[in-house]
Length: 101
Image (cartoon, rainbow, N blue to C red):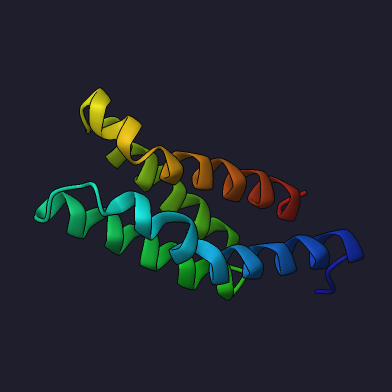
């Protein structure tokens, strides 16, 4: 199965997002108190990083869905404090949409 140039470019974009994921989210996650919730989202994002790097679109999509579900479980104040994570998920969703076309 060969990728089109457009798909190949989108997969490259996923790899770039993977490489930047920690930089885009770590500082924001620092405001979350340590504990199970913090461990959960860090675990989800680490899984997402690996899936993006290897071009696994379906697994990456599930990670984005799981991360959004986690964000929804937070208080409004916490969601504002880690808003960069939501923005990052939006960027990744856009890249996933391109890659799956």
